[in-house]
Length: 327
Ligand SMILES: NC(=O)c1ccc[n+]([C@@H]2O[C@H](COP(=O)([O-])OP(=O)(O)OC[C@H]3O[C@@H](n4cnc5c(N)ncnc54)[C@H](O)[C@@H]3O)[C@@H](O)[C@H]2O)c1
Image (cartoon, rainbow, N blue to C red; front, side):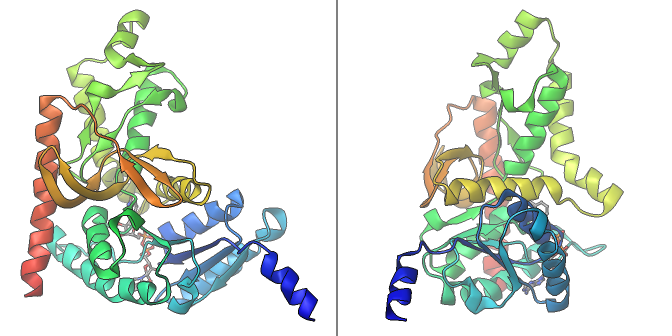
């Protein structure tokens, strides 16, 4: 018996990922995680336990044909030992509800759930997906007491993939060969960084000149609008978006668990970037086992710098509203 427990002590600790909020985004992410076989354990936590149970049952039934992962419905104590806790809990905008009201409502939910996560997990990484993701990542950072390095928002990872997809369609290329970023708010004030977009190390303009493809101002403006409005367009058609964001979350979690040092446009605490202070917003950052390893300082042009500062002002306004509402 004693020998047996010695052997167990030598085994590597199972990789646990906790998902708080097993709705469309949370459960689609869990599904992607199961198929990828990245985690040994996935625990689903949701205020609607019955819904989470249904998702866990459905996911477990895919296991014999995918990967052996332990999936169960738990509660906050199960966040203990999780390498990453993905938070996708929240409520959607009600008809007629303002953005400020939704912001206040979801911030209220975060001020309840984040301390409960942090009570049982002091060493993992918090990955926030709930909208408005930049504001709620800031709230999660404050409410957890974690170092900012370990509190990440999915930010514009999704917008960036939409941008790369549209560019690749226009250029007739594999999207993995098109490099471009959306930065700033995950929302209406987001900023496409045209000046640094490139293909095969060539500036977009240069690539288009050589290949004779058109990418003028009008096309660019149209593309930026399509990226910005993509969520509205999808929600109008099917009620919610969840596949692409789930893959974005998977990519972030993969980089953390495998310590890949991947550059992703996640939302993180910004301090002293083009004069921007004390907000969470998206910039390309290096992600690894420790969370945010560094934020990449981009040589933006004047228009992009101004737009990024504008985005930071929008987010600061939402944070200030929360502060004054809490008084
Ligand atoms: N960051 C992104 O790129 C991105 C993309 C798509 C959606 N989202 C956001 O993700 C969030 C979730 O979207 P969804 O479509 O999955 O919504 P959903 O309604 O399907 O799921 C939300 C889940 O949260 C749970 N929940 C609510 N309050 C809770 C609490 N206090 N504790 C625990 N669980 C709680 C609900 O029971 C529900 O299961 C939304 O805020 C949405 O806007 C973000």
